[in-house]
Length: 167
Image (cartoon, rainbow, N blue to C red):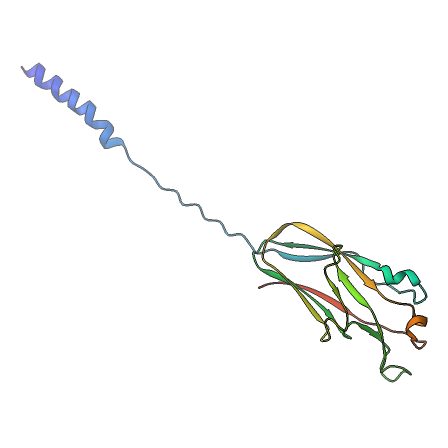
């Protein structure tokens, strides 16, 4: 009888051990993904325009920018210091007039701005999808010859600033 009790107790013990030895462990994984908003100048961006080039009305590529954004909502702001006109320095003859041009961002032809479409000199492109793989956008200007526009001789200039930001 002692043997039966001992064996019964041993069997119960062997059955109970796995129950008492079991357990679980929880592992939490956390990651922080930094915001990426980058704009890089790929080429060009200093261009002396040929004021006699009749083909410039079809566009002159100034260069390209690369854009990368891993945020859902972002925007590109394109600002012309002189409101989409090249102008002479103050005090020069004809400095009150300007040499107008049109500006295109990208190859699709959708973004053409000038002093009529954006008289304040600021154009904004809103995006609501990430651009994880860097996208490259060519920048073009379109202008007529100085002769066709009756532009006075002299040096004309404008500065265009392209800014990328999260919204």
